[in-house]
Length: 237
Length: 237
DNA sequence: AGCATTAAGTTAACACCGTCAAATTAATTG
DNA sequence: CAATTAATTTGACGGTGTTAACTTAATGCT
Image (tube, rainbow over all chains, first blue to last red; front, side):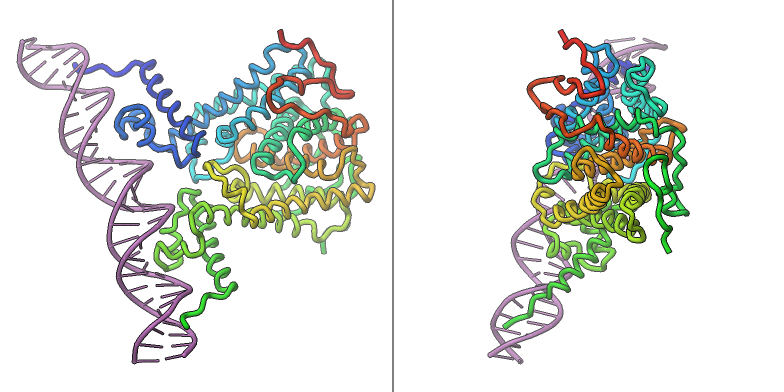
């Protein structure tokens, strides 16, 4: 026969070395600084060697993106570990998520948006699993809070999880993008956002009866009245 | 004397031609497809000509980013134009913002996150103005809703605007990033998010008394009790 | 032992990129 | 017409992703 193939562990070890170097380059100097040549230089191999483990830069960045999800998942898990009360866990989780995003904005940004025309992200099972698991931490805590009666949701826990995640992510994004007006800081907004969502999600006038939105064709129909909120106006024209 | 310099209009026209081509390339194929050479090829000039109008690719992308903010601002303005009732405007505005983001996810993503180590975004007055104006549309509507009594905020209107923006942006981001679990769509979440924030922002238990967050050093202090929400637990260790 | 086999890694090459200096074109004034 | 000088083009450099050809080295077979 011939030389035997590397074991799965050896391959994984190589992949992680490459990803370590790539992540370091990315966090230090952005995505354009991530190059096979610089990675190879850091690893002491030739510039074409990593191609055996990542068939393209896009694939490498996708793996990097999955790592970012694993990182935020871990940050949330570690934050809630010392606590058992679901509502406390939810607050701690939100705090940890946002702090992690602010401390490593580049790595955080990697989780969202591609800025490159690529459909590889849709086909990576590893990335899909990492996404699922990171959201799962949030969903689990919200569900526990709901089941324990501490958070009396008027929507299902999954919807509530999505809203919490979206709210937290929105704050981090706006802060990183410099969207907050002068004098305002995210510090004051985080507790307000969490409290607002908690209050709103327990508001009796809110239930799962919101009509579905039309994403195209018909316009402005989503402005229809919602119970206890507002009465619509004359339609345009 | 000598040949006279281009007028400000001529320069601006050139800049817009370049930005048109750049935006087209970006939306079609991502940021890496935006190159001086391809732009020049589209414009029928030499690959170095655009350098007279944008001294670097980073500067060009920053101008593109400002354009993205002007675009979303315009989408919001056009959406609310036919209406006068502030609460209706707020709903229509949120709907327009989110639909715009979903229809052009690449352009939308340009507004947030850099993915490149660059501090030029901080020094561009044009970009700063575009950011301010786009948020201003939201703030104006929220303030009007507050002043008219239609939206009885327990926080100041600017804070509420930030929360609305963050919530809407969070939903768009999660949708574009494929974060929603299978079977769920953003269509059902948008009205829920808006209604939740509206309900939460009018909730009497919420006021501006939320303690500021510690962003570093001290940990887990943000999990402290908030009125009417939860009672904290034993601290870790 | 020696050799064939074949996985892992290297080198060479290509097209493309951002960027800048030098050369070139073209419009305006004296 | 000629000098001046803004606008543009050309040439060049180092860096990039990617592929193909080549080299190295470990294994099993005879």
